[in-house]
Length: 583
DNA sequence: TTTAGGG
DNA sequence: CCCTAAA
Image 1 (tube, rainbow, N blue to C red):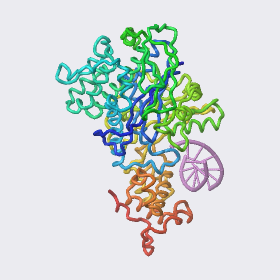
Image 2: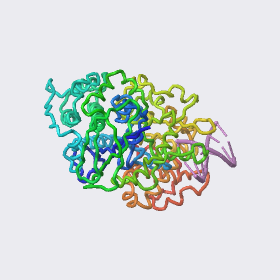
Image 3: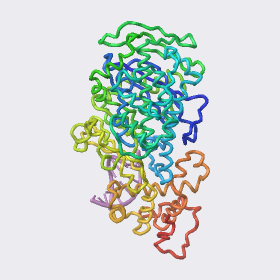
Image 4: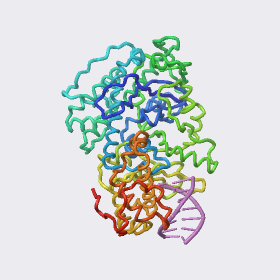
């Protein structure tokens, strides 16, 4: 197995992009860091730290080219439609593990998080644009492209830039060019798309992905196209490295290249590189230990492969995404419990985050060291983990977008055991809507316990309206009547069980209490969490908590009710401001 | 089955 | 959100 990676690196001086990214955080650039085993790297939200996506690849030349370079990501369905990326972001960001308290989203925040997603993607894009100018990456890129001047493609023949030229079907077209070309095209992308009409976007989408879409959300289209191009960039970068036999000398600030004409026999490529621990001007250097390369004068090697019926092969390769933190934790939990697997996913992060810029030793230890890779592969053996990564998908599809690990024949897995491209491609994502039942779309992870029973993991964020409904329910029927409330108010939400209601109420109580005690503290600590639930709502929860002591007892929330606006005890009526705070 | 409560 | 004991 070969591994190949790109390293994400945070820029010293975040570029200003038009993104809505507020913290200037998610700025990434890519670096090739190692090629040993298989993998490619993808930008993750800052909170998530370094992320790696490994693509399994046979140590064959052609597959190396196709897989390792993330070629498969050119298939948008495969890439996006497996779930809801925005949820992934939220979940990761909000540390959903263990505390549902933090996972309530107001509609505003749902919207905000979508914006965040957009911002993140834009931020990524922005930096990719900046790669050509970046202080530390310049050498990297310049050297990589053999000093070819960047061709000035200007705008496409039709006045608008057309990605049709990049189609895989036309290996001799511009896609066949060097990386500079692709990069340049990519750079063109963002600004160009800003001015493009929905028709233009549709055209580009169709050209790029081979199929039309009815999506009218321009932002969505832009993102997809952008990602498609980004993948082209990654592919192209890697291809050039392979083709030219790039050698990075650890002792030189500038990289040297030695073109090797050794032919890549179909046997295998030994393409391993070692990364320096040192960083030079904030930029880690890369060194190749040994490198057999493709013939440097055959620029079409990579593309020929694509053109020779290998596409299917590429497309059908499984793509593995780093599981969400929650998944990881629970996976390792499983392991702990049942001692089933020899090793857990070892890139689980502990309390501390991955350093964005750090020694590779750190990275390796924390993330994708050799041993961890082995573990992963063993962990993932055969099956794959498909973690949602894309825009929200239709309700009906959500159940099919099931992440499966080692799915055998449990009923739950039946129709989702294999994520056939066709199947996936039929799923039409749609822009997020903030309706009540939007929470219906979700990711479910099914994992098999050792007992053979599959356990489903949901995480459905509570919308504000759901919370309001719950509160209404409690005020009407009282605390503890969860089945009643469920039946009468949540009958349509199949995903909310009475236990969920109970849990949610408990969390609401907790939230309403903690807020009283440490207002400021919360604000400092976790911005997001503090704004989840409007104060008015929490206030109402508190009042209800007074009237309906939590379980059948007094021990309820007396402990945390002190500061509340005193409820008129004179009128001990049981129906408090039922709909008063509504809205 | 439902609820309470721990994790 | 999951699990389990207790009702």
